[in-house]
Image (cartoon, rainbow, N blue to C red; front, side, top):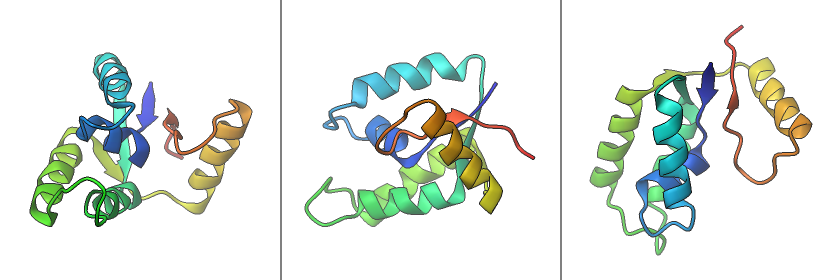
Length: 109
């Protein structure tokens, strides 16, 4: 199985003070064993913006880059097409997923 990991999961995994940190760590640890993990290039840029947002996580740009590089080396970075984004949204609707948790079954076309 292949899973596209979104910004929400990456952020919660990296930030111990995040309310869903343990849940995301557990999910990611369990998922890694039998899954190919993907992350969109857009999610990495979005993650950098969230990490370095003033008053939020107190992560410096340099620290943000280090965390993002670790993710980029442990997952396959992909650039999604318009149809792949729309497929992910359709899948989220079908599964009644709300908010930013669009970590979903992912198939490259």
